Length: 145
Image (cartoon, rainbow, N blue to C red):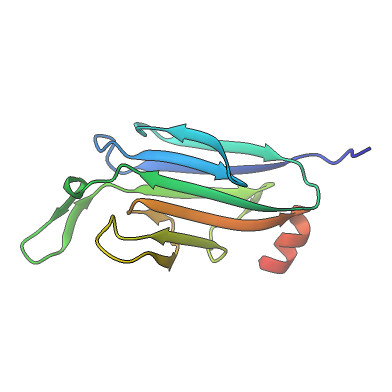
């Protein structure tokens, strides 16, 4: 019998331009656990999982970003953009704001090849921000922090 408490995954997701119809899908181990077709307000994401020995993949996917959601000046500089910001990310109450364990897979909204970028808290292109981790969570945290 397992008496372990589940671990809680938390983060805050904001849309920089709520008029832009950016969608957000959250996947855990290949299963959709949340899908918001148009993020119009701050989302306080929270999900619990058992703290049993297992590998996990958590992905936050932005979809629906279009060319008109980015305003570029005559010099080619981005003046205004629609993007998601992820903040206050924690696993079982432990802050993971250094983002080094996250990967950002995108193709610049179809303007280039698929790239696997570093993640710095902002999702500006259609694509996925992924965290791979294992439970029990404290063993993973000790090895990765």
